[in-house]
Length: 266
Image (cartoon, rainbow, N blue to C red; front, side, top):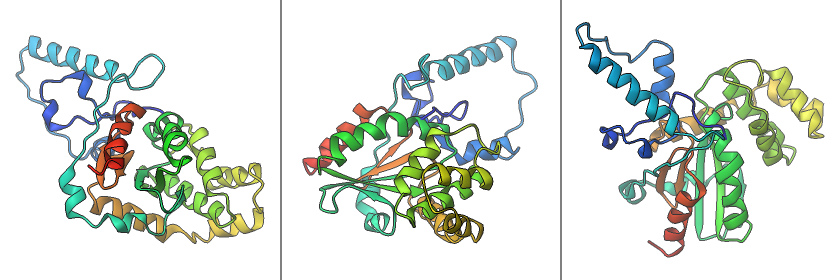
């Protein structure tokens, strides 16, 4: 998936601006700031040297967060054991698109937005490795949940994927959406395009169009997003591995460590 442009999230422990501790995820705070909310007034009397230093540091952080290929160079998973112990994560496994054996010892739940560029990057890289290494071998089950917070087209895309799921092609449509991202709310996931995607995938156009136009799955998408907030999701992608939280479009090796711990019962 494409990395989250300037919306990289900086956790509190990153106060020294260590570029190795960037978490690539698209946050709700960033979206509010784009709309003018949550911005603090700028001081008027900062020395020029301080301002220039801040600009240089910020530029370095943004550049080193991704390589020339567009993938993160180094990321850190935020794993919160307390969440796994205190919340009923069984509810995350219910009534959602699933890949893998229901008897798999590890359950991986991903919250994502189809317009989120970092989710696109995660899909193209880390998620594919998770599926080939753990899901197809019966070691893990992957569950996808919508966190559609980037605008109207996010909601339409999530609904469209569920309409495809009604015809047994959820994951094909899911993949097609991530492979055809063209920016946030630029019209690429307008309903007419979503309907054309269904034709490309060989779906029954009449049934699909009726499903999408009637907003049959609107409530389900909104419920997923609300569930994500309940469990502390504030940006995408956010992944839970047997209840342990992993934030951002982290590389496969980072998630692998968490999955291997889960397989060992840690």
